[in-house]
Image (tube, rainbow, N blue to C red; front, side, top):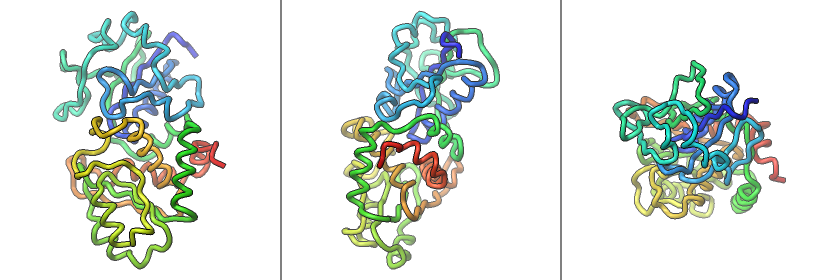
Length: 298
């Protein structure tokens, strides 16, 4: 592996989006012999706002989950795209809905490169967002495992649920689902403890009303009123707590005996299911990946 050929991956979006971007960059790096540095905590970062290495440990030398090792050199290197040369550490960028890409605010150009081609520059920068779901985000998880501190928290939450349980993932902020009728119809069908992963506290209240408060478990810190998705609310409490909640929600969904996900109402992306729902379902069906991811969980 050529350690002088670098790829700086700055992913936008929620957890599934971040994992999709990491996997895309890793596949490119394997093809063109580069080393990937994941930077989810830089000046123009949005949503995750913390070092990915606090939550996961890389299992591959080609993938580094913290850009701290190279951050001091970034402004010195020749870079593609060239318009950020000398200011890799301090440019600003944001997702442009019309363009469908992340654009640098000064030039209005995408901070990325053509993934089909090789480049001579020692540093490539990709700052993007993904609307994919399916196998690509799951593949990213094969490259890492959970930090042991998160494994301990996962064990604690599993203990609070107690025994085998059913799990529901209900997204109901920017994307919405018609979950109300479903939980009423299935109130007498689902037995035992129920774990609810959601971005809307009203969903938790509705589930407790339908299934019984003593049976329903939900751990994520949610805003007092429904609004924007959690990954777009950096002011919502401790960023570490918010990220941990998202990661542990994913794992609790995947570890359930029975997993229920809900089809989205019509949306501008044309998505049938939340990417997070698809990732949880895929992870649940890939037991070896799940076990390796939480290998410290006895």
